[in-house]
Image (cartoon, rainbow, N blue to C red; front, side, top):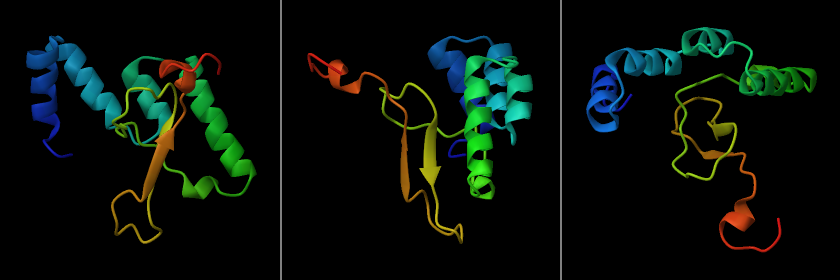
Length: 117
């Protein structure tokens, strides 16, 4: 959102070296409003990652807070050690920027030198 789709595509092509077609596919997929739309646009079908997200939404629904979750493929957390789903939390009124965030990371302690997990 900060620099717009066209600039993102330009950077993916010029700075990363992706083809214009792949850059467009990435930008289109991250604009998806639903998990189904994302899976189709990204061309990943029912990958393990999509199945994991489906399970997350199903569990949230079963526990009574499914309507509090919103799929957003454009969320990117700035730390390189995340290994799965990342999230951001917002106030109910939707006035503030993200008030919390995090995600899944496996083997974080060993990444920083711990001899055991």
